[in-house]
Image 1 (cartoon, rainbow, N blue to C red):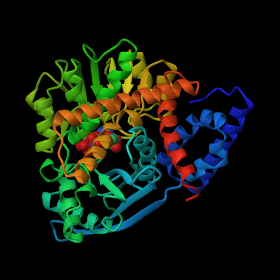
Image 2 (image 1 turned 120 degrees about the horizontal axis):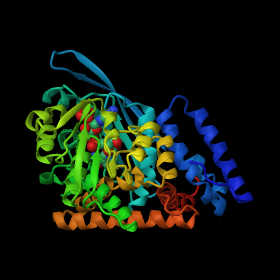
Image 3 (image 1 turned 90 degrees about the vertical axis):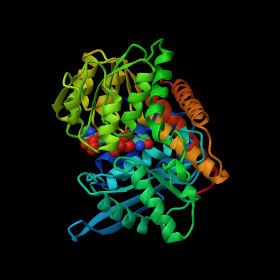
Image 4 (image 1 turned 30 degrees about the vertical axis):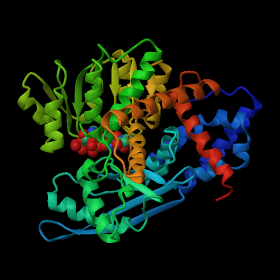
Length: 458
Ligand code: NDP
């Protein structure tokens, strides 16, 4: 995304950003995903530095981009054949400027330092946007849950927590789920943490089962929140989900509840996917089937067509973006929409794209959307509903109360509306009206940067 330079201040700000980015590149070689996330955020902050040079004087950028702490550790465990396996664990405690570190754990074979750092860096700004007192963190492991038995998942997860427990706590760092980590894994981790510490620290993890300290709506929060955010963005342009066709990638936690809310809002969801391929159902996806296949049977999305023979299954997950639709919600993984897929979506008439996943669009794809005036909701704003309800879970845990579904859902909706409003206002104020990439980055950054200045050089 090229921002237009129009003054000496903008030139000085651009030089500052370029210099810091070069340092980051040298310090973090071969970390493509991390550098991609840094580049997007840095570039959109140029107008902030031009308008308020104090952030350059305090060198906020160079400080915020260096994690406060990056922990890596060994996770030994024994598989069902009695063989010792070893995985690598990570926790990045990126920023505690506005609250305890907060961010999910991902179990996926692609996990490495670059992925965890990109997610942790994004999380700082996302968490700030929610208006709640939560800093930025992220973690996970290169463990692949696919094909593992229940016993293997439990033994691995317990070993993971045996090391992680040294670094987390309700006022220090509060992990949650992400790809490959759902209610089952959070349950095993909570059990192991409790056993190791001898304390029932309900607030040490979020995404817990509702029976032992979890919050209602946490499971639905990211998917619902994404749809609430996108509906707000559509409404500003006189559009709505109702009567629209929608394509939603993935079939995990975020996708399932995005499908749920989009359908409730009157949209027809034509397709969803997993990492092997996608299904197209011209009648609209049957969510009950997807939920059972994925949440209960842990099956593949290809099995959908066995029960719905009129639907079609296609190998390869990225083909999903060739389906014409009004609204696209990428809810699977990073970089799932590249420049070509973005061009195809635009050629097929897409009106809005809302990122349920983290960084699902490449920088080039975002440019294609913005240049073609597609309404674009970046992940750090649109998918902030998950962490927002996690913070509500922490609030309920510390006050030992449980709120009703309606109450949490109402709060979630308000938070998503506020994030939209604050982002769109920041975009306007900094000279990029309607650009939610700039708006969300700026709004999130200002809150964290001001806290950093107030707390001195730490
Ligand atoms: P899940 O593990 O529940 O689901 C992930 C889904 O994406 C699965 O259907 C998976 O398919 C699919 N997927 C994974 N990798 C690929 C790939 N390379 N190509 C196509 N599909 C793929 O994870 P979540 O739903 O929790 O997370 C999805 C995204 O949302 C991630 O980017 C995550 O960081 C982000 N997010 C999640 C939040 C949450 O609260 N859970 C909060 C904010 C953001 P398969 O089963 O084949 O692996």
